[in-house]
Length: 168
Image (cartoon, rainbow, N blue to C red; front, side):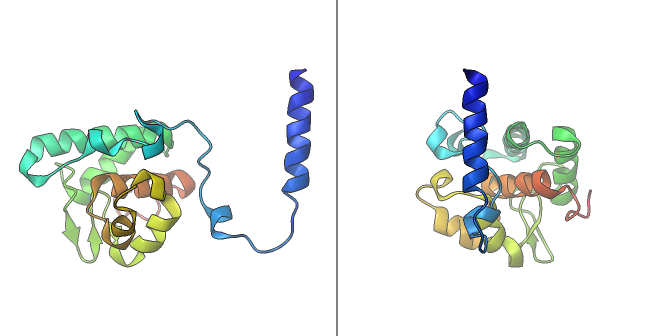
């Protein structure tokens, strides 16, 4: 019974997946079919309420929360070297305390995303449902938002490795 169901599903996938034409933007986005690592699945991976950071929290609290956010994202999207490598690269990029408001030469945030490329990367790697109230703001200039920066960066590394980061 299970084998028959799997065969039917694979056949249907092959039939529907052979359409010709250009790929839409949705076709080029990374796969999100895995389980969502969040207390509230509609908010996306690594629930923002748990990982929100503000400068007034102090460097130690910000560092602890951002490190937890990176580990959460890596649990959802595996990256070369795992969480240890992701944390090492983030510390190299934004400083020992994983400061989300780090800025240097047109690069910003925890993983020093290039500001000029941010809107395209945010559209490719983030979902509007993950930022239900602030998605347009996140796409336009959300590089300093720790969760957005980490999710874009981890998903980029998941898709293609750490090549874009000088600290890799």
